Amino acid sequence: MLQIDSWKRVLIWLVCVAGLILALPNAFYTRVEQSNDAIAAIEIGADTPENQALAAQWPSWMPSSLVNLGLDLRGGAHLLAEVQVEDVYANRMEAMWPEIRDTLRPERATIGTIRLQPSEPDEIRVRISQPEGMARALEVVRGLARPVTSLTAAGQNDIIVAADGSDIVVTLSEAEKLASDERTVRQSLEIVRRRIDEVGTREPTIQKQGIDRILIQVPGIGSAAELKSIIGTTAQLTFNPVVNRTSDQNASAGIGNKLVPSIDEPGQYYIIEAAPVVTGEELVDAQPAFDQNGRPAVNFRFNTSGARKFGDYTRDNVGSPFAIVLDDEVISAPVIQSHIPGGSGIITGRFSVEESTQLAVLLRAGALPAGLTFLEERTIGPELGQDSIDAGKVATMVAFAAVLVFMALSYGLFGIFANIALILNVALIFGLLSMIGGTLTLPGIAGIVLTVGMAVDANVLVFERIREELKTARGPSRAIELGYEKALSAILDANITTFITAVILFAMGSGPVRGFAITLGLGIMTSVFTAIFVTRLMIVMWFERRRPKTIEV
Image 1 (tube, rainbow, N blue to C red):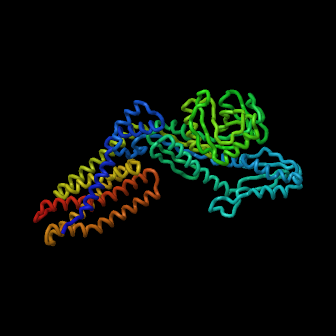
Image 2: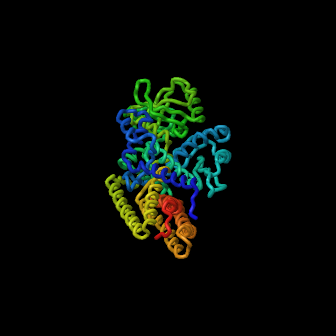
Image 3: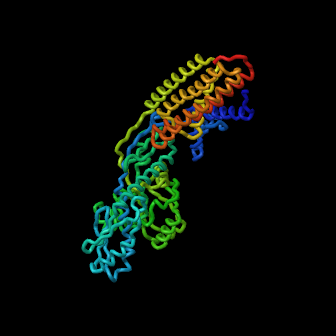
């Protein structure tokens, strides 16, 4: 006999109601989106009457999660960036000089004086005055070598140390360069993602392409230029000792130093030590603020090691200027007034409020390890996105209407039950996408359209099986029960194999392919649920109420 436990009935309807409630905000997309943005603005301090009015557009007790629209639906910016991995080699060699110098100093009796020599960006040359001590010097410097942190280069060292006359030449090994390239691109990828997430953009597509390129697609952003302003700055912050100050842009900096311009004082240049005392990598927080004169500034705070180095330097150099350098430009060069032990401070300069906020975002997200060269940039306007949405709507509505008509004509009342379940199925898909914060793209719409057909397929299998059982079974109740039992294996087999395909597409694909895989996978789960449970529950409830002697499918 047909029978479904009461708790199962309640659970099935609760799932359907929850799906409808979660999907409901998408029917009022613009209103809910404006309300969400206003609430986010109020939380960060922009509590204006306009934002209060916008926030009140949607009830606070209702779900407010939306399906994010992809770049092809909403418009936005597309960038293809190439990471300049060679920059890291030069920075690495530059940072090694203090370490090499401190290692060789105890050996002066054997090797004589130590001088840094001009060298190529990817190497460092150190000249010793007593060439007869070269063997000892090479042995000491080779002690600085570390194993390459890469599975493919196990057992190899990161540097190669050789002699060239009176010079010690240190270069990166090929294995270390390959490992460094991989680390640099991976780190750049993560920092670009953090910078974009900091400004609240929804569901960007940020992925590695090729060996040293990054594809960046951000829906809902105004232009490619705006996106470049967010991610295009290297934001390499360093704190360097000041050697001298000059107005001559051609002044000789000397070996181990560099000449950098001042942003705060146009026409002025600073000669600073190339090796920084502390870098932005040791920052743990940066927030926009105002200095004692009410001018925009940025508060910063170091981690434990950075705070220790910063405190030690300020203790030993009270009265000396200290340059705060951002991307090889001095933004401030204050004189150290006293020991700063807490590892925190303030960056002042000629900032606007917007510039100080942007600088804080960049510093908080971290410095790009290398520069980015933008090879391709496109701005996709909202008009194109709206055209795509309209085309997708038409395709979905035509497919949906055709399926509804077919089911009603082919299976009568049972077909109407299947149509109700089909509508619930689509609502459940949107409810799940909203709940997980999924992104809907044009391929995703294609996945929904395909799901509509597959959901009907499960009902067709059941109804055809019921037809066959009506010819042999003792009554309609037994025919319906056998129809669901015998069709179940075919439904599960077909949907499980398709779900496996969706999982593979998601794991192996990227961008639009993943969007298709997500909607297809979610659609399979909801279509199986509605076909096996929802349609069956409606048929059982109808049968219990009417108790027909015969049925027609």
